[in-house]
Image 1 (tube, helix red, strand yellow):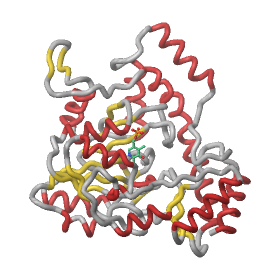
Image 2 (cartoon, rainbow, N blue to C red; image 1 turned 180 degrees about the vertical axis):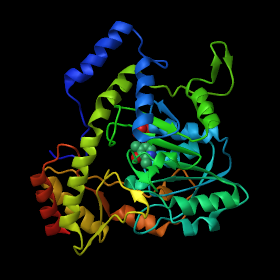
Image 3 (cartoon, rainbow, N blue to C red; image 1 turned 120 degrees about the vertical axis):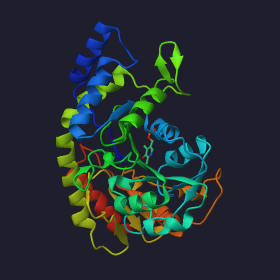
Image 4 (cartoon, rainbow, N blue to C red; image 1 turned 90 degrees about the vertical axis):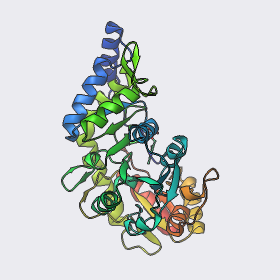
Amino acid sequence: MIPVTKPFLPAEEEYNKYIHAIWERHWLTNNGPLVNELETKLKEYLKVSNILFLANGTLAIQIALKALALKGEIITTPFSYVATTSSIVWENCHPIFVDIDAGTFNIDPSLIEAAITENTSAILVTHVFGNACDIDAIKAIADKHQLKVIYDAAHCFGTKYNGQSIFEYGDISTSSFHATKLFHTIEGGAVFSKDPLLAEAMGLLRNFGHTSPVTFGSVGINAKNSEMHAAMGLCVLPYMDDIFKVRKEQWLHYEAMLKGKTGIQLLKLTLGCEFNYAYFPIVLENEKALQKVTTALNLQYVQPRRYFYPSLNTLEYIDQSKCAVSESVAERVLCLPLYHTLKKEDQDMIVKVILKNC
Ligand SMILES: *Cc1c(COP(=O)(O)O)cnc(C)c1O
């Protein structure tokens, strides 16, 4: 079986060493030493101003929305995982979908201004597949209209934009460290902000709003993560340079075999983006071709995934609107298997099956 992704696991003994120390300390959660160590190491590794390690990437978005006290309409992308939209709705805000660029699959900044109304409070968009949004254009629009910006950077561990971590952009960036992501803590996520006051406010929100054991400064939630999860992060982090190196080779190998083939569109990288090679999406000619390719791959025990389908503007629980590009891409996109132990021969076989059936 060749799945779309396979979580990276360190040697069992390495994890067990951390687990043994947790048993000795008897400190399992609530801002424990491993959570602190992971935050410190991630801050150094990523060269970011502030980071808060959280229970998952969905709570990260919800805390970001809450910390900025956003209300009303939030401009967002229809081409992302459902958590981007559901978090907006969960926080009682109204998602306004703006269509994507047909090449980068990120929000098309030239369409944003037409969607701004007096009720718009923010732009919350995803750097999809680890490829940067047009951050400069989005910032210019946000500044002009005094809107907050949140980036869902769940795919972006290691991505840089104009030379610095992509997590440094926007009022807040969020990420996911779920097992399926490039860097993972089994379940986990984070929020990033250059603004120390915002970071502090999110720290309170993460822990029930506790300002002391007996005082509460705001309506908080429990978004803390545990020592066991931090331990996994501490085990995986030292492997990241190697993971990036292998991932880039695998990605370029797919690209070399698929570039310029009729009926197959590849991801166009954004100018200024230093890519992390997180995903390898292909966009086929139509949904029928996608189904044919999927069936043929499944026969070889290969499981690509429809990242991302459906286009989020078509969800049943929101006021639907039309996003022609996103809907079209969502109908035709497949992410190919990409994980640390994927073999070159398997990539060759996958591409052969695709080219024969598309
Ligand atoms: C994975 C993902 C999330 C959610 O992260 P979890 O850690 O699974 O809660 C949010 N947004 C995007 C774009 C994702 O891919």
